[in-house]
Length: 65
Image (cartoon, rainbow, N blue to C red; front, top):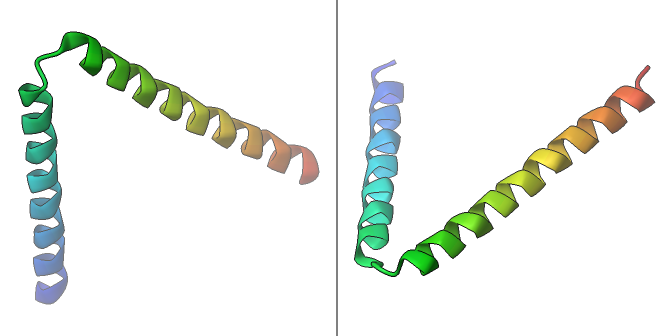
């Protein structure tokens, strides 16, 4: 159990470091339009993934009635 916990803690720390780095990059980029474009791209990508998930689920339901 102790070994498992240590691994979990390490993973959390790595995620935290990555997130901090991401924030520093965002702060350095003062160009608002560039930030806005980045956010738009992220939103589009996220929406695509959501749509794909919904489609696959509906297909799965239709084929497994």
